[in-house]
Length: 419
Image (cartoon, rainbow, N blue to C red; front, side):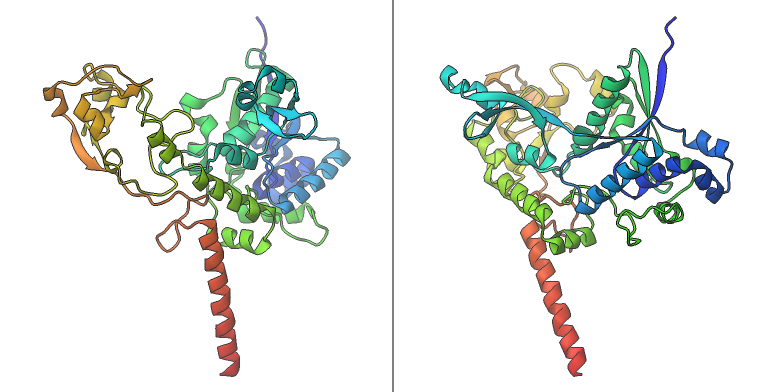
């Protein structure tokens, strides 16, 4: 019988939590003593790992990249491997101008034009991905997929390449999620039963060690982690314009006035320019069998926030069904048929359009099962998902908000000085 290999790895993000884990690994005896436990207990709660792996999405804060470089030096001195990996994409570059085309664009060229390009498998950043697709990292009511695409999956691919796939090796990843962040472990994509990746398992040592953000920072100070040489604490890591930014983080982005702000403005501008809901109308509003738009289209008016077309102001749904009832609901009902546009209901289409053809029809009796409900107006989608003052703001609005607050601050200061 073949023995399954097991390897421990650290998913290193360059922020406070994962840096605390890395520092503790480099000085386990000192860390264990500081925590008031034996070295054996620390190793039980936080197993020693073979490598730390940082997946670079290309839009982290400069301070994070500084911390990564410092971590590399500390790891090299201790004989610990720290690997930096990136998401890659096959693209085609013009031999003279170096203009880049994605595979779909290259395939649309004539044979003579194709010969003018060469294929390269090169790093592809998260901002390039969003700009090329005219997308935002998070849509209202949708899930956040950036972390898995540009971090988790990249680390998994590296682990499989280095140690073998699920048939020969299970990779156990330690993640820096604090004791007060149980909700994050529940939401973590790779931990959901339907999304688990074979050969990869995840654990959260900081929760077993009962360490929060404050205690991680104290541990880093105790272990002499000084990535800037001036005692500066390690900063939280994330894309500079992460959709889950808090207000102070948005202010930090604006005040820095660097590449992160330029990327944020460009991503939002491109998203509005490529209004995929308008494109859907132009294409005849076709949907696939699941009731969803095909690639390049949006059924909801995310860019503008509202569409007055009758098929966009309300829908018809079958309400009140339990999960079991949905599973056993009689034909012709399918999951995609529980939400129909007015046009679909009027024409009697139960599972929407597919390639412009009607798949089946509803009887008048079946139509009575549907209830008309208005579509919620979420307002225009923005790169930042948080709402301030009850409203989701664009980056330009955030910049103006910041200017206004600074003006008010200066006026108040002058008033107090004169008073």
